[in-house]
Image 1 (cartoon, rainbow, N blue to C red):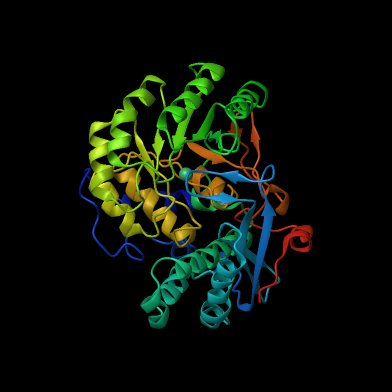
Image 2: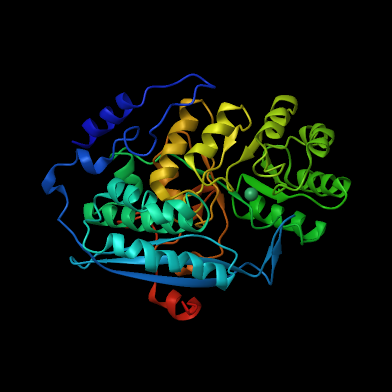
Length: 418
Ligand SMILES: [Mg+2]
């Protein structure tokens, strides 16, 4: 049966030529849901009987980290537990900068808007429930991105967690219909923050690559003087040698002029990609940079919807596509974006607002994914934390989406909902 589902999915999504983004509707008809292809008795009928929001604030590595735009001491995990009448519990969450008032906006949407739409429903009907919340008129009026989308993303992840648990398999096996896990390379972001000294980022990169087995590292750039950025990138390149992938990330700080002026120097240092070089929404500027720079452009962590990605891809404004289940509305929309990228021959390297727990599954199950970011801040919260061994992610074994919390996480990190 699983082989037949896989065959059907491959037939149902023909490849398209670059620049011709597939037309609507992306959310239901274009992506057949596995649930519709399963025999009725494959899953035990379930009913959602309680919706329990939560907020965790978990410390980052060291006292504080910074990039060119942000500075934070904790990672925020506003999420939800969907309780079913079978006893199975689905866990989903978003990822934030641990600002309690805005985290409460997300859990408030879940509690007051999504929950009444979910109670009594069968969680196996993910696509229908996704649509029910996304197109709920009062929510659609104020949403389609931002708070409502982050809340829907948390709900969607919890629904997929339940579906995989009901099937008794880790989510990546459910999504790829039982195929063996491919090798998924890890690159480490957690040593190259902008607030760390040059000596520290060099030491971190050497430790990651020479002691811990990583074959890729990412550095933040966006200092007031780009020459200082280049000195830092050059120092790390000297330390790690020519065979390690080295990415840089400006978090939207640079102008087109700055990026065009400095990208040849980054190319000389064999930078693998430049991430979010320009302001997040500026499609024409990214398209011009992508056309004129020899360093590939990566972006996507600030894009909220399939339609945002469609427009960037159609404009030729991105090479490495970086969707995030916590910014898009969950696994459902992430897969649609990954499919779109694959149809245009673009690699997908997920941004890990979930700190890898869910993206490890979605990436293992998608042919466009060969590499995934690694940031270990919230690993202690989960029953099966994402793990890297010899530079490659270990495929999860527990049923579910990797989101099940250990009780200790709620005891140690929970914040008041109101
Ligand atoms: Mg980034």
